[in-house]
Amino acid sequence: MSNDNVMISKIPTPPKMAICYDFDKTLSPDDMQSFTLIPSFGIQASDFWKESNKRAMDKRMDKNLAWMYELTRHSVFNGKSLKREYFNAIGADVPLYKGVETWFGRMDSYAKAKGIELQHYIISSGLKEIIESSPIASNFEHIYASSYMYDADGVAVWPAQAVNYTNKTQYIFRIAKGIPEEYDERVNDSMDKSMLAIPYENIVYIGDSETDIPCMRLVKSKGGYSIGVFDPEKDNRRKVYQLYNDGRINFYAPADYTEGKDLARYVMEIIDAIAAQEKMKAEQQSLKRDADWYQLYRMIENQEGYLPESAKPRLEKLRNSLKEYINGKIE
Image 1: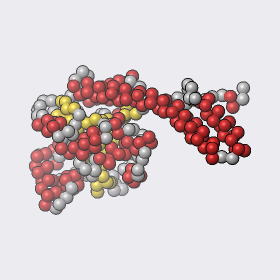
Image 2 (image 1 turned 135 degrees about the vertical axis):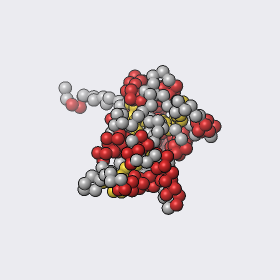
Image 3 (image 1 turned 90 degrees about the horizontal axis):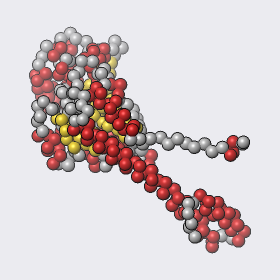
């Protein structure tokens, strides 16, 4: 049998969806710096944030740049070297909400059973070096967070990335467009919806506070889903009630990632909805194929009157060939 007679069928890739998470007070009960890093300098976390926020106001600084500066200043004052290894050691001890460590495997399995490839991303103003050493770091396709540049001795000397509430949104575009690297300016290029790596309507954003509003609003406005979470023990729902009333989120739930809890139920319902939508898209694409063949057939047919007689046999042959690809009768 010749190669010309062998038809190679392409195995369709499953549709993709992404869940994007804030970290502090979304996956972890408090700001990651507050647990070990700030106390290691011999100061109270509340005093550190008060000092950092005051510096931001006095110097008209971005608040994230202010706390990153304060860390380097305190490290010099206390004789503690801010090396990557130091941040990494802290990351291993950052506490997580109930159910977080098994969450990703459970959601991946559920999505796979529905024919969906699920990806997870962090979009956080916290410190990337700490998140990278947390017990859940391996579950993420990419961790977008604030980070330092290090000198030849591996000591933090300057911010490499400072992620704040407004520039968080760029990472939603990076995820959708499949342009993951922070330095890649192609993220600003226009991209047809059909070329997106992950459609916006297949993106979920989970966050806890006002700093997540731009991402929540962006995702929801583009047909995706936003979820507000709150600490299950404190049970303070003021923020999520306001976010819901303002139309920023689709759902709100305690930050309890345990199987069977509200958060898991909502995300599974979203996966169900995306799976159903993707099935309809596939059906519509199949219908569009025949309709497009028919449209081309009619276009050629309409041109016959404008061509010389010598060209008409070739045109008729082309029309007849197209007709073989179209299901059903079209005369």
